[in-house]
Amino acid sequence: MTQLGHTGIDVFPLVLGGNTFGWTSDETTSHQVLDAFVAGGGNFIDTSDSYSAFVPGNSGGESETIIGSWLAARKNRDSVIVGTKVSQHPQFKGLAPATVAAAADASLARLGTDYIDVYYAHFDDPDTPLTETIGAFDVLRKAGKIRTVALSNYTGARITEWLDISRREGYEPPAVLQPHYNLVTRQPYEREIAPIAVAEGIAAVPYFSLASGFLTGKYKNKQDLAGGIRQNIAGQYFSEAGLAVVAVVEDIASARGAEMSTVALAWLRGRPSIVAPIVSARTLEQLPALLASATLDLTADETAALDEVSARIG
Image (cartoon, rainbow, N blue to C red; front, side, top):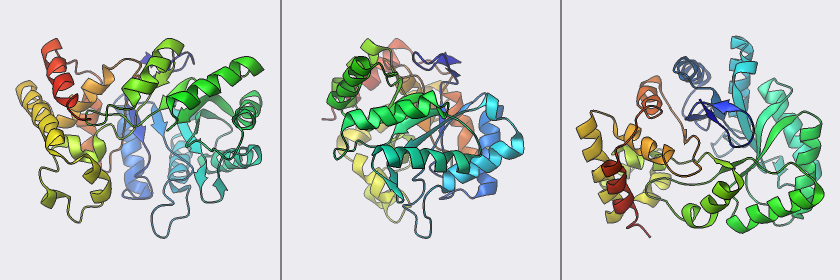
């Protein structure tokens, strides 16, 4: 276990992403994946109130509902850390105080719990004064509805502004950041956000840690992308420089007798301020390689090779 920044919360060094629940994983499969994750030592689950409104026929909240039914069936709420997000649900767009309050109550109802461990502002809302949003989160925290304030997809400048307002007004500062960060997307995280996280003792739990499967070696050419459910997402990483990164990951994995996903996640876990990468498992078969990353430590030479090849991507 490792400390989640300055929260006092202990977490396994891998977060299970719940974006597949109610999308590519039905409720039964989702419960099986959750069971296996916990059995493997995991305890931190990530979701959002908007998952998976992007799927035809869904309205948002499907992932939270599935996690809630699992928590109720297993009666393990106190041993699990749950993180969810606000601002993108079709009925609760943005971060106006009334929206944040209503969305939090809706998430609590779907999850079947009276508190959320880590509550993220999912995306910045330029139309709502930041002071009002921060105040709304503080109300939730003081009411015991959330334990920790967190930010996802915020720029370095806006994170700094949030911190400055929190200090001035006496609010609890954000303790967790969720950026887009992986071996083929190192910026702007390393340039703009990591220095703040390190200086402030804020934990970072990056999403798209495996670049939507690109770093697993699943997509070696354009034909591999065609027609896949993640075609549009994984395609953004496809380039000659990206394939060079995949090749180095594959070489290290082969030498270590490990899966490529294990190696890519181990590199990420070793970066400054990274506490636990977020990964999704659509099926049970995908989970062992992900869990193995929590105990695989790369050598200095392996890390340097991955640093060098990934730095070539602009």
